[in-house]
Length: 205
Image (tube, rainbow, N blue to C red; front, side, top):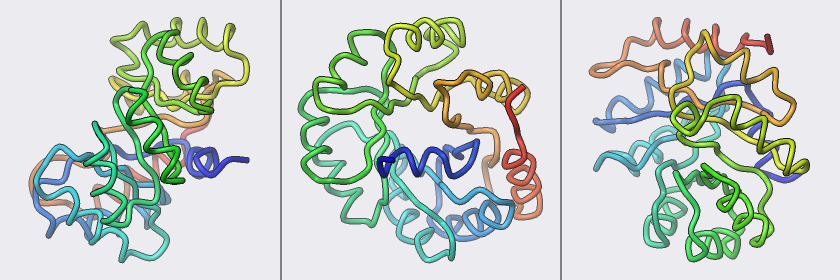
């Protein structure tokens, strides 16, 4: 089993996190891990993201990665911050080659057959299907799975606690990405822990 597949199989839901204040990072990570979600994706959408990764890595049991990685520079900065895996919203040959060369577990985004074929050419076969709902939803993913039998996915984008079980029932889906677990503003650890516990208990429909 590849290292990225190990990450994908750890929990049914990977929290997709937008951290505005690095001071919030550790309480959020502690609450998510306490609720049963160990794999945490911190998106590089805010100036606080890299510091948030560093903070979250101090939490016992947390497996912290960087998301929304767009280019080689961000890849290097994310790895330097201690990211244990890398997620990108799309796939370019330049970023893909750099990620493969780095050896870091890499989950690139795909939205169509050409994206998947580009990844396969780079030796990759585990992908983030993004944006999942906007790219045709479960029907589209099943079509990809029928053509690319060895490929496995983490659908992200528009997925909710209510729709996650249907996605997880598809054999090519190893996990889903979810942004519903943590609200904006100051974190509420009890609410986050409860949301994490419910997400960790999600099973295929």
